[in-house]
Amino acid sequence: MKNLLVELGDRSYPIYIGSGLLQQPELFKKHIKSKQVLVVTNTTIAPLYLDRLLKNLSGYTVETVVLSDGEQYKTLETVSTIFDKLLTCKFSRNATLIALGGGVIGDMGGFAAACYQRGIAFLQIPTTLLAQVDSSVGGKTGVNHPLGKNMIGAFYQPQCVIADADVLDTLDDRELSAGLAEVIKYGLIRDIHFFEWLEDNIGLLLARDKAALAYAIEQSCLNKAAIVAEDETETGVRATLNLGHTFGHAIETGAGYGTYLHGEAVAIGTCQAADLSRRKGWLTDADVVRIIALFNKANLPVTPPTQLDAQHFLELMTVDKKNIDGKIRLILLSQIGLATLPGYVDQTLLELTLRHYGRQ
Ligand code: NAD
Ligand code: GLY
Image (cartoon, rainbow, N blue to C red; front, top):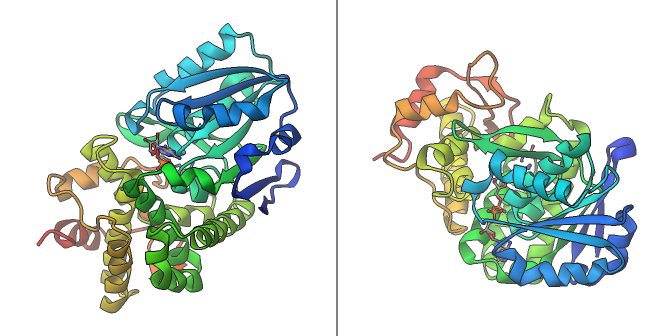
């Protein structure tokens, strides 16, 4: 088992990565300080892993909430059903919430934990690759609004993250690839060696080679933990984790939540960001080809949906947490392995990317 640390002073917490972690009750006991425990999961994950998790929780008073599965349910209404359960079962302020699932469950469970009685403890048990390499780490929690992705939320750190690589066995190939989009992101924004490793090993990752997956999860979490430790609330460098996300969120919202997987939209958005970085003169044509090739090899889409025209894209991109006074700010690449901080973009260049990248 690997044990990484997200260093945030008295709110520091470990990320455990390894095999068989869902069968280690002592790991749970170490981080649950209450008698009352609420497990939040969904209809897909419950039949697969809920019993395995519950076996670790004998001796606690455990309740479960099984939510509908899907990005379209990542809403305030759904979070409200978690509050209903907590209140109906008379859960106190010292209770613990366990989020068992992918990024949707982790974001909503964390948000419910942040809000219930102004904050109860919570554990992240990520079950998708995307959640293990990104969403479970760093304390971003929240829900979508019909007008904008992740626009309602809170920064709220978990007690620990328990990433059991075994659960990825049941993840379908499309979801595995979606997780790889965020893995590739770390290479692009700050780790050229990892990017090169991914170019060489993407086939092994797609074949679910255990050692390759473990390495990719660990490197991703190391990169994310370092960024979060430096900038927990995104006043600076943390924003680089949003490479491609302003385009990607516009795709998710514009196409309807759940049409594109988050990682798929991020893959397309990152290729658009690369195209814009080339138009700025920062990346070469060869760099962009190289980036698109890696996403392609990871079986990810690289071109935006045809029904989203440039005007609609622009409107959707004006709803983004990086914007200031309603003006779009983007993360771009100054080279492969180095992202820029958020910056205002030349509208003409942005429109060229929106009109021409992937449109021929
Ligand atoms: P998801 O949570 O929807 O999970 C994907 C699908 O896989 C779901 O159908 C889920 O039920 C299923 N699933 C989960 N684990 C499984 C398993 N082990 N076996 C079989 N099926 C399984 O999607 P995701 O890609 O994990 O997360 C995407 C969400 O994460 C988005 O809402 C995105 O905004 C959010 N996100 C948040 C952060 C953050 O920092 N908080 C970062 C990145 C993404
Ligand atoms: N996934 C972006 C962040 O955690 O900041």
